[in-house]
Amino acid sequence: MNSITELPSHIDVLREGTTESIRRSLSSRKADNLDKKIWPSENLLIDKLLSRFDEIECFCLQLNEKFNFMERYSILDCLLGILAITKPSDLQKSREDKKSLQELNRKIAKQAFDLAELIEKRSELNNCTQMSSNTYYSISDVINDAAQDNYLFQSNPKKQFNQLFYQYDLKYWPNITQVIDAIGIDADCADIEASDSITEAGTKSTRSSVVDTIRAFFTALKNYENRHHNISVKVMNMSNQCFTSIFNIGLALGPDEIISDDQFKTAKHRIKKEMNIR
Image (cartoon, rainbow, N blue to C red):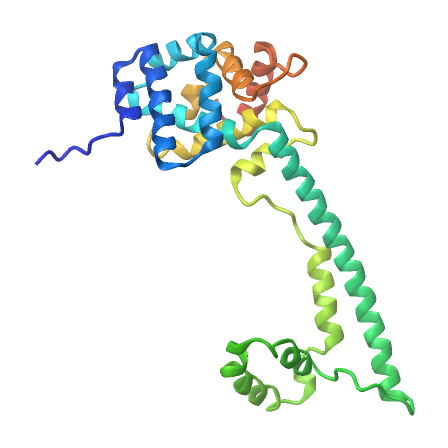
């Protein structure tokens, strides 16, 4: 029995170390995706690269010269993934989502503080005047009513919760005002964070640009370091020209958006400093 695991064709073909093998690798990868009915956005990206393949010859040459076949696969895999999911429009949407969360938290904090103040005033009237309203008195009332339609709560925790709650005087528990205040403080102090390092890298700049995608690519490449030592540094040392063609084609940049070799060089220099790559 052969102990060596057979590699998928789009990886194995890269052993040849030729420009044509990279073309065949991309085509084979697309065929695999279509067969499995996955990654339609990646398939569109591969189509773009294949239709202008002669423009990425510099990239292919350096990929074959500087890296072994598994490193070639990892770099291609990283590039395809990043170019497919971190287009400037995608990252702009993430920026807008961040602003929306910030605004929602601001509104939640304000309304929570206002509501807590109103409930506190109502409690004072209920307790200190000859009038009272038949409204919630303790946080247990709120929890029990809120969980009326929660079968799981009703079937088990409800009895235990109420037994525990009423073992202690109300002073041992937060009141309704304090709970709502806590919600307000939580929203007011919230830090908005990206759910992954790639989105974080791609939205680091205050303004959206192609640099976002470049930064996301080199950030994603760090995830391959456990398989390929120092691959980020090696890729950083590839020529700027070979990458500008890949990014311009992959991101389908218009005439006014195309990134030049000098612009890529400047972006790469900035990212190297950010990532402390020498």
